[in-house]
Length: 92
Image (cartoon, rainbow, N blue to C red; front, top):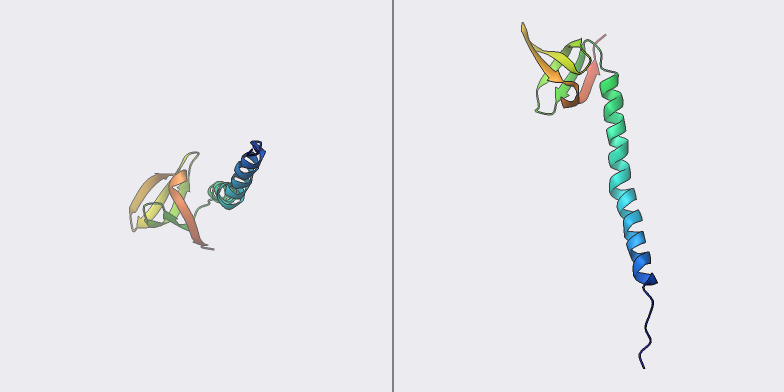
């Protein structure tokens, strides 16, 4: 007679897969989102930034939900703050 095994080993496998997924995917993604929010919160005038669409510019004005970038002489474009990908360097 074959012996039947309980369903516990498969449950342990699923739990193990979940923990691996959490530590390899979810946790790093959350920390990156936290860093992005902190970077957006600390935007200030004259920071050189890159947008998600690849536009390089200098922050001319920071508003509540948007930021105005100077991309060339006398050319300013207003973006959502969430569209700022990174800060290159801060001018002093």
